[in-house]
Every structure is written in C-alpha cells, then in structure tokens.
Length: 270
Image (tube, rainbow, N blue to C red; front, side, top):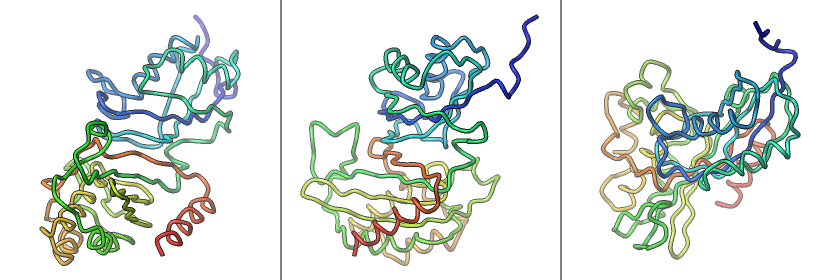
C-alpha cells in the first residue's frame, strides 16, 4: 500500500486568478453544479499526480459573480513543476472564463481564507442600456442620484450587525461585520460602488448595493437605510442586486497594504 505523503513533503502555492462567473454556481465546490473551485480541482487532477491535491479560496462568491484578482492556495506533494509551468498548464486546460494570473510559492502555514485581513468588492451599475455589458453590469432603468447614494453609503461604514442583509444559513453564526469603506464613482456611462471590509455575509454586498440604488432612485430615505442596521428582524432580500454586476476585486494579507489602500480611496474621494 502506498504511503500518504507527510505534511513536510507537501508544497503550497499561492494562486491569483480572474474569472467571469456567468454560468458558474459560485466559487465553492458542489456535487451537482459547475463551480470555479470544482473546475480548478478537475483540471488540477490532470496536471498533478497527487491524489490529495487541495485548492482553497479566500472565500465564497455567489453564482454569477466575477473576480478580478481572486486569491487561493494550492497544496500538493507533486513537486515536479515550477510555478510558471503550473500556471501555464492550468491556463492551457481551463475554460476561457477562468485565467490563472500568477503562481508563487508560499509557506505551508499560509491559508488563503484564514490569513486574509481584508476584502474589496466592486459593483458596476450601467446608467444606460448597453449591448455589451449585460453580463458584467446592472442597468436599473431609472436615473440615479449618485450624491444621495454616497450619503447612504456612509451609513454602512463601521462595525454593524448585518443580520438584515444575511441569508438564513448565515444567521447561525455572528452577523457583525466591519465595513471599512463604501466608495461611489461615476462617469458618463457607469456608477461603480466599491465596498471594502473584513469579510462579508452571503449576498450582503449585493443587498447593500440594492439599497443604495433604491436611495439613488428616491425610493428609500437615509433613515430607512439606517433601520435595516438597527433592526435585525428586518430583511433586505427583496433589494438584492443582480450577480452580473459584482466583481470580487482583491484580498489583502498585509495590514499596512490594506490600510494604505483605504487611505488612497478616502483621499481620492475627498
């Protein structure tokens, strides 16, 4: 019987990847659904001889959500391949909608989820109907007041109980989340919402964005937005923005880098 490789013989690599989430049921592997993690593991089984190959991400993304720079780690006892060859072999076999941007060796103690100190999401809201961005933005079909949205965005900043923004499974654990910043950017054809925090509950970012859009339309007041944070028995599920406009942007593993990112965003906003 073959011996199971000991942990000391296993190597761990940090993966950076981008993906278009259309057609995938999110990041996390599922038995009867096409997912990003599941696809990576299937391709990895063709590349590595290790039957205990493990790939873990920094967190979940919802079905249909995209990623600009998603971080994962890969652990294997198969040490034949250099990081460049690992990247190139994955990209040769992966579907066009998933791309490995970089592969770097990391310490065996590194864990993509447990070591993450901050996360950033970006949501794209189109201000007009477009033939090209349907899978990558949301067109609410009404004019939006971005200044009112920015005022409402400030309400979310800080430590709050986001129970009203959570799916039922999330209510089994703490629903308190630190939101470090919510930033609104507008140009001629797009309003972008950047949401930065310690972590996020399932569908929380999409529901925050949905509320901001309702404020932009004039359908919700700032006091009504505040009420969803003060009353955990309420639900924001009816305000969930479509997955198509949401991009995971970046995972942070260095507190100084994370704080500098926030300082730069606050400086640009001012």
